[in-house]
Picture 1 (tube, helix red, strand yellow):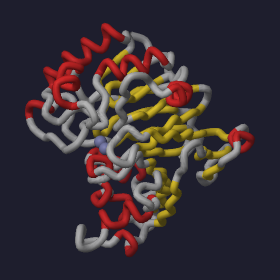
Picture 2 (cartoon, helix red, strand yellow; picture 1 turned 120 degrees about the horizontal axis):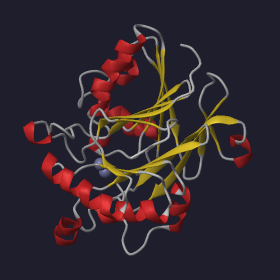
Picture 3 (spheres, protein in one colour; picture 1 turned 180 degrees about the vertical axis):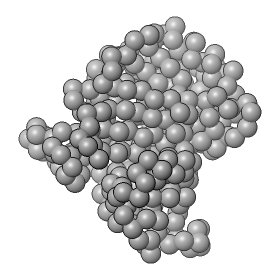
Length: 304
Ligand SMILES: [Zn+2]
Ligand SMILES: [Zn+2]
């Protein structure tokens, strides 16, 4: 693989809570959370929802037997963010190396969170017996995941001094609002551009100033926007998800350049999601509703 200057975000699963196949969701897609980020020479994957399954097959097709080096960044351990993982075909290949990153939840590190999902009695195949190479990195708040120039391995560092010569840097921020253990959010920076992935988060009276600082000035904010404001106020407060007003409010307050509405409510069909997108665009112009297959190139100036 030649050296590449690229920063490409590709959506493989955009749905919240549970997969929703069917004609009513065919345009936005029914798979749960999974985003591929091609950044420089690295492949990062945000969450392992059911969208991960097709991504795995596509990665295998693209690399045609060459070794795959992947970094899988998990926000939290709810099923909609992990349910594609046991069917991720690169895991079964000897030539695959996967670094897992994720939070400590209920006293369990990321290896302890992931392993039960892919081992008996919950799954017939035991991840510990697979031929791929796996490393697990539990992330605490305000740590950094970095890649130095070239094809080097990912490193987890604590000190701001260590990120100065990083080619790619991932910042992490933990928020508590998602029941009952919270979720981690990630900000990926490369070549002066940035994307923030903030799903499974709910804001109450005000936005957390620390989070706003974390998201400040991002080129792209992918934010939880599960509910219409009306549905949220009627019955969904405290569920740990945002409405579109919260997503556009954060985008405005953090001064981001573009917003993607993400983690769609599974009972909403394409028409309802289109209406939410139109409503959100009145509040924050550069807003799009996430759709499976959507690609955003962060190195190309965004126009719309
Ligand atoms: Zn979720
Ligand atoms: Zn969740």
